Amino acid sequence: MKGYNFAYLDEQTKRMIRRAILKAVAIPGHQIPFGSREIPLPYGWGTGGIQVTAAILGADDRLKVIDQGADDTTNAVSIRRFFARTADVATTTKTADATVIQTRHRIPETALRDGQIIVYQVPQPEPMYRLEPSRVETRRMHALADYGLMHVKLYEDIARLGHIGISYDYPVMVNARYLMAPSPIPAFDNPKMHMMPALQLFGAGREKRIYAVPPYTEVRSLDFVDHPFHPARAPHACGLCGAGDSYLDEVLTDDRGGRLFVCSDTDYCETRRADGQVGAEGVPVGMPGGAVEATQ
Amino acid sequence: MSETTLLSARGVSLSFGAIQALVGVDADLWPGEVLAIVGESGSGKTTLLNVLSGRAAPGTGAVWYRTPDGQLLDVHTMPAPALRRLHRSDWGFVHQDPRQNLRMGVTAGGNVGERLMAQGSRHYGHIRDAARDWLVQTEIDPKRIDDLPRTFSGGMLQRLQIARTLVTHPRLVFMDEPTGGLDVSVQARLLDLIRSLVARFGIAVVLVTHDIAVARLLAHRTMVMQGGRVVETGLTDQVLDDPQHAYTQLLVSSVLNA
Image (tube, rainbow over all chains, first blue to last red; front, top):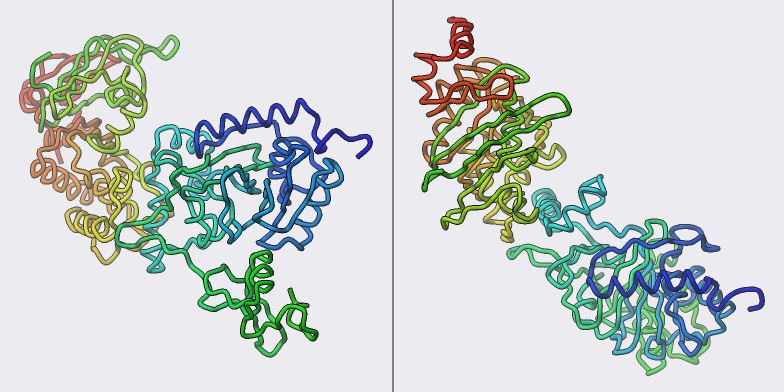
């Protein structure tokens, strides 16, 4: 695009961000400060993720952007178009075809492979921010690996609710050293981070932090021996593709209690349907009258 | 220093600008012993406690701690992670105001269990059993394990703080005016509790107090401080019954007999 540098940010800024990324990869799970820039996007919409993506994007990359698992929501469409215009890179909605995936709130169902990079948009990089208000103190706790407080939170949940009540942004230990916020992905996605072959980068624009999980790194969700981590999932099959193993969105279809559970990962759902899988409320691909499909 | 001391300080001095808070203080603590530091406000008692526990660095002098395997550690030159580990396992600190130590938004059970979890305990059932056990030992109704500390009385808060501190069976506990701010009957009960727990578990205690009666009841040995110096030290009964230094004599004679 004329008048803009490749991928919007100037080269010096990208260099600064790449340095932060290198440091983050060298210390898995450790939050690295960086000089977050103004981005033509409101805070909370992915300013951190967009800066990380801009810094790592090359001319021959193929970009996929998802928001809550979907390729076709406002945030995903806008960011994908932003990079298509400012970097002129190829875009895709296919997880398997992408080299860089920027995501908000989900990890794709299709297992990521070697050589891919997944960039998470992070609203709050500090996993203990609700428990300890002082950043000086949380930084000291990270330095000393003093994470008893996080377990106190889990203890309190079990004492009050009978189970650990964190359903998203479920804290993890990275490489048995740093406590990390996995960004607001559902706890269901946490096991996918463990030993993932792809590089995982996390960008928090407002909080000015970058952190990373290198490929094949141990990522463990916190739990107790007698209350093990349980990745929760709605006990249904996808209404459109029939998948029984994917993370589901609940969609209200009318005002008489009608509801439909569908895969939150639209690419996963479409790929399955293209393969001929049909759910209880779905219509085979290519058939007319897919009223249910319109709700997606 | 002797072969068997648990904690030793030599030549500890500390100034805050022109104010000399500590001047050449030596102190020794043996395992299982209760050492009281008495003196008036501003005499340097609490500063000395902070220096002994590594919470404040001295200007000159050093403090050594002997680990269970006989290793001598310099409290002020050891790495910060090691000191923090010591503070959450071998050592404990009881504040005058329990609110400084407790997490007021976390249940009693969570407060007691925190040190266990910080040490790596990852079994909810065991943590809860230990918490319940320590509530009983500190005379708090175990039914209140899921209550928030803000619903507790002052005396209960102090006992909860003691439960939270002792749950990891520390060898050494620092206490800063543990009975301050409590009314007399609650104080008596708390002192009784501290005395029995300390004796049962053989915990060494450094106790800071301005109350001679507390020192007499709990301490084996007493150090009297004035103006940042130790003016007299010895067995508690000896120091309080036969004070040698003029300031100690004044201190002992100024206690009212009820």
